[in-house]
Length: 337
Ligand SMILES: [Zn+2]
Image (cartoon, rainbow, N blue to C red):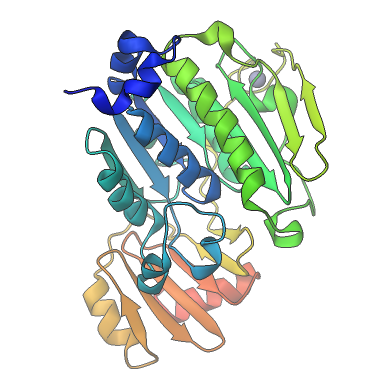
Protein backbone atom coordinates (compact mmCIF):
# COMPACT_ATOMS: atom_id res chain seq x y z
CA UNK A 1 0.00 0.00 0.00
CA UNK A 2 1.24 3.47 -0.85
CA UNK A 3 1.42 5.65 2.23
CA UNK A 4 1.67 9.03 0.48
CA UNK A 5 -1.80 10.08 1.58
CA UNK A 6 -0.64 9.84 5.20
CA UNK A 7 2.59 11.82 4.68
CA UNK A 8 1.67 14.74 6.98
CA UNK A 9 0.53 12.41 9.71
CA UNK A 10 3.73 10.33 9.44
CA UNK A 11 5.83 13.49 9.76
CA UNK A 12 4.28 13.88 13.20
CA UNK A 13 6.91 12.15 15.31
CA UNK A 14 4.67 10.04 17.59
CA UNK A 15 3.11 8.43 14.48
CA UNK A 16 5.92 7.99 11.97
CA UNK A 17 5.94 5.28 9.29
CA UNK A 18 5.89 2.52 11.87
CA UNK A 19 2.90 4.05 13.66
CA UNK A 20 1.05 4.39 10.38
CA UNK A 21 1.45 0.65 9.80
CA UNK A 22 0.04 0.04 13.28
CA UNK A 23 -2.98 2.23 12.52
CA UNK A 24 -3.55 0.42 9.23
CA UNK A 25 -3.57 -2.91 11.10
CA UNK A 26 -5.97 -1.72 13.83
CA UNK A 27 -9.68 -2.39 14.32
CA UNK A 28 -12.07 0.11 15.89
CA UNK A 29 -15.81 -0.08 16.47
CA UNK A 30 -18.00 3.01 16.88
CA UNK A 31 -21.30 2.59 18.72
CA UNK A 32 -23.80 5.23 17.60
CA UNK A 33 -23.35 7.22 14.41
CA UNK A 34 -24.88 10.59 15.22
CA UNK A 35 -22.98 13.79 15.87
CA UNK A 36 -20.09 12.22 17.80
CA UNK A 37 -19.97 9.00 15.79
CA UNK A 38 -19.77 10.73 12.39
CA UNK A 39 -16.98 13.04 13.63
CA UNK A 40 -15.03 10.10 15.06
CA UNK A 41 -15.51 8.00 11.92
CA UNK A 42 -14.45 10.86 9.65
CA UNK A 43 -11.24 11.42 11.64
CA UNK A 44 -10.28 7.74 11.95
CA UNK A 45 -10.99 6.86 8.32
CA UNK A 46 -8.87 9.79 7.15
CA UNK A 47 -6.14 8.75 9.62
CA UNK A 48 -6.13 5.29 8.02
CA UNK A 49 -7.30 2.75 10.56
CA UNK A 50 -7.54 -0.79 9.19
CA UNK A 51 -11.10 -1.75 10.02
CA UNK A 52 -13.95 0.48 11.19
CA UNK A 53 -17.30 -0.98 12.21
CA UNK A 54 -20.14 1.48 12.78
CA UNK A 55 -23.22 0.33 14.67
CA UNK A 56 -26.32 2.52 14.57
CA UNK A 57 -30.04 1.95 15.07
CA UNK A 58 -31.45 5.09 13.49
CA UNK A 59 -32.01 6.72 10.09
CA UNK A 60 -30.96 10.15 8.80
CA UNK A 61 -33.35 13.08 9.26
CA UNK A 62 -33.08 16.70 8.22
CA UNK A 63 -32.67 17.86 11.84
CA UNK A 64 -29.43 15.81 12.04
CA UNK A 65 -27.61 17.79 9.35
CA UNK A 66 -26.74 20.75 11.58
CA UNK A 67 -24.16 18.66 13.46
CA UNK A 68 -23.78 15.19 11.89
CA UNK A 69 -20.89 15.68 9.54
CA UNK A 70 -21.16 12.77 7.09
CA UNK A 71 -24.81 13.17 6.07
CA UNK A 72 -26.55 15.32 3.45
CA UNK A 73 -30.06 16.24 2.33
CA UNK A 74 -30.22 13.28 -0.06
CA UNK A 75 -29.62 10.83 2.82
CA UNK A 76 -32.39 12.49 4.84
CA UNK A 77 -34.84 12.44 1.90
CA UNK A 78 -34.20 8.70 1.45
CA UNK A 79 -34.41 7.99 5.20
CA UNK A 80 -31.19 6.01 4.82
CA UNK A 81 -30.00 4.20 7.94
CA UNK A 82 -27.13 6.20 9.42
CA UNK A 83 -24.82 3.18 9.40
CA UNK A 84 -25.40 2.74 5.65
CA UNK A 85 -25.11 6.44 4.72
CA UNK A 86 -21.91 6.73 6.79
CA UNK A 87 -20.40 3.61 5.24
CA UNK A 88 -20.95 4.98 1.71
CA UNK A 89 -19.37 8.36 2.49
CA UNK A 90 -16.43 6.87 4.35
CA UNK A 91 -15.58 4.42 1.56
CA UNK A 92 -15.39 7.33 -0.84
CA UNK A 93 -13.09 9.20 1.57
CA UNK A 94 -10.53 6.41 2.02
CA UNK A 95 -10.73 3.08 0.22
CA UNK A 96 -7.81 1.69 2.29
CA UNK A 97 -10.13 1.29 5.27
CA UNK A 98 -12.52 -1.64 5.57
CA UNK A 99 -15.68 0.17 6.67
CA UNK A 100 -18.59 -1.90 7.86
CA UNK A 101 -21.93 -0.27 8.67
CA UNK A 102 -24.19 -2.37 10.90
CA UNK A 103 -27.86 -1.36 11.13
CA UNK A 104 -28.67 -2.58 14.64
CA UNK A 105 -29.25 -1.51 18.19
CA UNK A 106 -26.59 -2.55 20.69
CA UNK A 107 -28.47 -4.78 23.15
CA UNK A 108 -27.54 -7.26 25.86
CA UNK A 109 -28.29 -10.12 23.45
CA UNK A 110 -25.92 -8.93 20.68
CA UNK A 111 -23.33 -6.68 22.40
CA UNK A 112 -20.56 -9.23 22.85
CA UNK A 113 -20.89 -10.54 19.30
CA UNK A 114 -20.82 -7.04 17.80
CA UNK A 115 -17.83 -5.79 19.84
CA UNK A 116 -15.61 -8.87 20.17
CA UNK A 117 -12.29 -8.84 18.33
CA UNK A 118 -11.89 -5.05 18.16
CA UNK A 119 -8.94 -3.13 19.63
CA UNK A 120 -11.06 -0.18 20.71
CA UNK A 121 -14.68 0.88 21.23
CA UNK A 122 -15.71 4.52 20.75
CA UNK A 123 -18.82 5.92 22.39
CA UNK A 124 -20.93 7.81 19.88
CA UNK A 125 -24.21 7.16 21.67
CA UNK A 126 -26.66 9.62 23.17
CA UNK A 127 -28.02 7.56 26.06
CA UNK A 128 -26.94 5.92 29.29
CA UNK A 129 -28.75 2.65 28.67
CA UNK A 130 -26.31 1.84 25.87
CA UNK A 131 -23.26 3.27 27.67
CA UNK A 132 -23.71 1.05 30.75
CA UNK A 133 -24.13 -1.94 28.48
CA UNK A 134 -21.01 -0.94 26.54
CA UNK A 135 -19.07 -0.58 29.80
CA UNK A 136 -20.05 -4.10 30.91
CA UNK A 137 -19.20 -5.58 27.51
CA UNK A 138 -15.84 -3.76 27.42
CA UNK A 139 -14.97 -5.02 30.93
CA UNK A 140 -15.92 -8.57 30.01
CA UNK A 141 -14.04 -8.55 26.71
CA UNK A 142 -11.10 -6.51 28.07
CA UNK A 143 -11.38 -3.86 25.32
CA UNK A 144 -10.56 -0.17 25.97
CA UNK A 145 -13.45 2.24 25.33
CA UNK A 146 -13.73 6.00 25.19
CA UNK A 147 -16.78 7.61 26.76
CA UNK A 148 -18.12 10.80 25.22
CA UNK A 149 -21.24 12.89 25.84
CA UNK A 150 -22.48 16.28 24.67
CA UNK A 151 -25.40 18.47 25.74
CA UNK A 152 -25.86 22.11 24.74
CA UNK A 153 -22.39 23.66 24.58
CA UNK A 154 -20.91 21.21 27.11
CA UNK A 155 -19.13 17.93 26.57
CA UNK A 156 -17.30 15.28 28.62
CA UNK A 157 -15.01 12.41 27.81
CA UNK A 158 -13.05 9.71 29.60
CA UNK A 159 -10.81 6.93 28.34
CA UNK A 160 -11.34 3.58 30.03
CA UNK A 161 -8.84 0.74 30.08
CA UNK A 162 -10.72 -2.08 31.86
CA UNK A 163 -8.89 -3.25 34.98
CA UNK A 164 -6.26 -0.50 34.64
CA UNK A 165 -8.19 2.78 34.89
CA UNK A 166 -11.55 3.74 36.40
CA UNK A 167 -14.51 2.50 34.39
CA UNK A 168 -17.86 4.26 33.93
CA UNK A 169 -19.31 2.54 37.02
CA UNK A 170 -16.26 3.38 39.18
CA UNK A 171 -17.26 7.03 38.64
CA UNK A 172 -21.05 6.76 38.25
CA UNK A 173 -22.14 3.47 39.87
CA UNK A 174 -25.69 3.73 38.49
CA UNK A 175 -27.28 5.35 35.45
CA UNK A 176 -28.82 8.77 36.19
CA UNK A 177 -32.42 8.43 37.36
CA UNK A 178 -35.31 10.75 36.67
CA UNK A 179 -35.17 13.83 34.48
CA UNK A 180 -31.69 14.97 33.49
CA UNK A 181 -30.61 17.42 30.87
CA UNK A 182 -30.42 15.97 27.43
CA UNK A 183 -30.47 17.11 23.81
CA UNK A 184 -34.27 17.11 24.22
CA UNK A 185 -34.22 19.97 26.67
CA UNK A 186 -30.93 21.80 26.13
CA UNK A 187 -30.25 21.27 22.41
CA UNK A 188 -26.72 20.75 21.16
CA UNK A 189 -24.28 22.76 19.04
CA UNK A 190 -21.70 21.44 16.60
CA UNK A 191 -18.55 22.95 18.22
CA UNK A 192 -19.24 21.09 21.49
CA UNK A 193 -19.49 17.86 19.51
CA UNK A 194 -16.26 18.67 17.68
CA UNK A 195 -14.39 19.22 20.96
CA UNK A 196 -15.42 15.86 22.45
CA UNK A 197 -14.79 13.98 19.20
CA UNK A 198 -11.34 15.60 18.85
CA UNK A 199 -10.28 14.46 22.33
CA UNK A 200 -11.75 11.01 21.75
CA UNK A 201 -10.01 10.48 18.41
CA UNK A 202 -6.65 11.79 19.70
CA UNK A 203 -6.95 9.29 22.56
CA UNK A 204 -7.94 6.61 20.05
CA UNK A 205 -4.79 7.23 18.02
CA UNK A 206 -2.59 7.07 21.14
CA UNK A 207 -4.21 3.80 22.18
CA UNK A 208 -3.94 2.22 18.73
CA UNK A 209 -0.27 3.27 18.61
CA UNK A 210 0.33 1.70 22.04
CA UNK A 211 1.25 5.09 23.58
CA UNK A 212 -0.87 4.64 26.70
CA UNK A 213 1.43 6.84 28.84
CA UNK A 214 0.29 9.82 26.78
CA UNK A 215 -3.45 9.36 27.50
CA UNK A 216 -5.02 12.26 29.44
CA UNK A 217 -5.99 9.95 32.35
CA UNK A 218 -8.95 11.99 33.57
CA UNK A 219 -12.61 12.76 33.17
CA UNK A 220 -12.44 15.96 31.12
CA UNK A 221 -15.31 18.35 30.57
CA UNK A 222 -15.36 21.56 28.59
CA UNK A 223 -18.00 24.16 27.82
CA UNK A 224 -17.18 25.77 24.48
CA UNK A 225 -19.52 28.69 25.29
CA UNK A 226 -18.38 29.64 28.81
CA UNK A 227 -14.83 28.28 28.33
CA UNK A 228 -14.98 26.40 31.60
CA UNK A 229 -12.64 23.40 31.61
CA UNK A 230 -12.79 20.76 34.33
CA UNK A 231 -10.63 17.73 34.91
CA UNK A 232 -10.99 15.16 37.63
CA UNK A 233 -8.85 12.06 38.14
CA UNK A 234 -11.11 9.17 39.11
CA UNK A 235 -9.54 6.18 40.86
CA UNK A 236 -10.04 2.55 40.00
CA UNK A 237 -12.58 1.41 42.60
CA UNK A 238 -12.12 -2.17 43.90
CA UNK A 239 -15.81 -2.18 44.97
CA UNK A 240 -16.99 -1.16 41.51
CA UNK A 241 -19.77 -3.58 40.56
CA UNK A 242 -18.44 -3.89 36.99
CA UNK A 243 -14.62 -3.86 36.91
CA UNK A 244 -14.12 -4.66 40.64
CA UNK A 245 -16.75 -7.33 41.32
CA UNK A 246 -17.39 -8.47 37.74
CA UNK A 247 -21.12 -8.30 38.31
CA UNK A 248 -22.07 -7.37 34.76
CA UNK A 249 -25.74 -6.64 35.36
CA UNK A 250 -26.34 -4.66 32.18
CA UNK A 251 -25.01 -7.44 30.01
CA UNK A 252 -27.23 -9.94 31.82
CA UNK A 253 -30.45 -7.99 31.88
CA UNK A 254 -33.33 -8.79 29.56
CA UNK A 255 -33.71 -6.55 26.54
CA UNK A 256 -36.10 -3.71 27.33
CA UNK A 257 -38.67 -3.38 24.62
CA UNK A 258 -38.90 0.39 24.51
CA UNK A 259 -36.40 3.20 24.40
CA UNK A 260 -37.11 6.91 24.12
CA UNK A 261 -34.87 8.47 21.50
CA UNK A 262 -32.93 11.59 22.48
CA UNK A 263 -34.27 14.79 20.93
CA UNK A 264 -36.70 13.00 18.66
CA UNK A 265 -40.21 12.87 20.17
CA UNK A 266 -39.91 9.20 19.26
CA UNK A 267 -39.81 5.76 20.85
CA UNK A 268 -37.95 2.73 19.57
CA UNK A 269 -39.82 -0.57 19.91
CA UNK A 270 -37.79 -3.77 19.86
CA UNK A 271 -39.34 -7.14 19.04
CA UNK A 272 -39.44 -9.60 21.97
CA UNK A 273 -37.39 -12.11 19.95
CA UNK A 274 -34.95 -11.61 17.08
CA UNK A 275 -36.83 -11.65 13.77
CA UNK A 276 -36.20 -11.06 10.07
CA UNK A 277 -39.14 -9.20 8.54
CA UNK A 278 -40.30 -9.54 4.95
CA UNK A 279 -40.35 -5.82 4.13
CA UNK A 280 -42.04 -6.33 0.74
CA UNK A 281 -44.99 -8.13 2.27
CA UNK A 282 -45.28 -5.51 5.00
CA UNK A 283 -45.08 -2.73 2.42
CA UNK A 284 -48.11 -4.12 0.56
CA UNK A 285 -50.07 -4.18 3.80
CA UNK A 286 -49.06 -0.67 4.87
CA UNK A 287 -49.71 0.83 1.45
CA UNK A 288 -53.43 0.36 2.07
CA UNK A 289 -53.15 2.66 5.12
CA UNK A 290 -50.87 5.50 4.13
CA UNK A 291 -48.02 6.55 1.89
CA UNK A 292 -45.00 4.30 2.28
CA UNK A 293 -41.41 5.14 1.44
CA UNK A 294 -38.55 2.78 1.84
CA UNK A 295 -35.17 1.43 0.86
CA UNK A 296 -33.41 -1.92 1.18
CA UNK A 297 -33.19 -1.54 4.95
CA UNK A 298 -36.45 -0.04 6.20
CA UNK A 299 -40.00 1.11 5.49
CA UNK A 300 -41.27 4.53 6.50
CA UNK A 301 -45.01 5.10 6.70
CA UNK A 302 -46.97 8.25 7.60
CA UNK A 303 -49.86 7.28 9.86
CA UNK A 304 -51.19 10.61 11.05
CA UNK A 305 -50.28 11.79 13.72
CA UNK A 306 -47.46 9.23 13.84
CA UNK A 307 -44.64 8.26 11.54
CA UNK A 308 -43.67 4.61 11.70
CA UNK A 309 -40.28 3.36 10.53
CA UNK A 310 -39.75 -0.40 10.51
CA UNK A 311 -36.34 -2.02 10.07
CA UNK A 312 -35.85 -5.51 8.66
CA UNK A 313 -34.65 -6.73 12.10
CA UNK A 314 -38.15 -6.10 13.46
CA UNK A 315 -37.33 -2.87 15.31
CA UNK A 316 -39.53 0.13 14.76
CA UNK A 317 -39.22 3.83 15.53
CA UNK A 318 -42.56 5.47 16.27
CA UNK A 319 -42.29 9.21 15.81
CA UNK A 320 -44.82 11.66 17.21
CA UNK A 321 -44.91 10.30 20.75
CA UNK A 322 -42.61 9.96 23.74
CA UNK A 323 -44.99 7.54 25.42
CA UNK A 324 -43.94 3.87 25.26
CA UNK A 325 -47.55 2.69 25.69
CA UNK A 326 -48.67 4.67 22.63
CA UNK A 327 -45.68 3.40 20.65
CA UNK A 328 -46.48 -0.18 21.66
CA UNK A 329 -50.07 0.32 20.46
CA UNK A 330 -48.93 1.64 17.07
CA UNK A 331 -46.43 -1.22 16.70
CA UNK A 332 -48.99 -3.89 17.61
CA UNK A 333 -51.56 -2.45 15.22
CA UNK A 334 -49.34 -2.10 12.17
CA UNK A 335 -46.49 -4.56 12.60
CA UNK A 336 -47.88 -7.19 14.98
CA UNK A 337 -47.42 -7.98 18.65
ZN1 LIG B 1 -15.16 0.12 37.49
